[in-house]
Figure 1: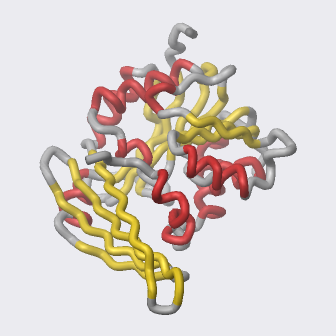
Figure 2: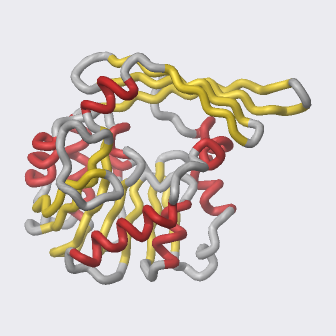
Length: 256
């Protein structure tokens, strides 16, 4: 079974994510970065998907490099880009583990639990190392991750239903062990009145303790300057569903 392939998901992603307040998320991330000493420059949007956040970060003054492993997601991003012709946003098709940029970056983001989609701690560590490798000294990396608590209790073995704009989604979760949850999305899209096409997406996510993520960040040369409840600034704890990590690069890796 192939997990975390978003190619078949691209046509439905923005519709199913319609509840996400992207403008508020962009403002929140921008504020966290600026508060920690980086006021502008080149920003990496890791696992950028259809580019909704990338475009908004460009609106806030950043030169954005959006990276995603799905050609279909990036095709949607390029098609609806408002900044492509100006050069404010550049999209690159790469996996997170193979991140290879043309130059250095001043800040980076990875939102909506993108890093949870990596299969294990070794892979997560590798991605943190790659971001560190291309980041300027003092650069800030902001990312969010679902917690073990969310995987065990909120997702767990539960099934959720969502219907919006002619798309009907059955979201089934199967908690395995060690923070791993397998997610099956059965998506039905209305073609004609009463007739639907069916698409199935398999996703596997892995969660880690806050201290484990912090340890891996420090190993990659980052100082974790904040761990917050998602979209807030109160100190995070293990019972939060999603946690935002704010990291500053203090140890520069040798460039490739």
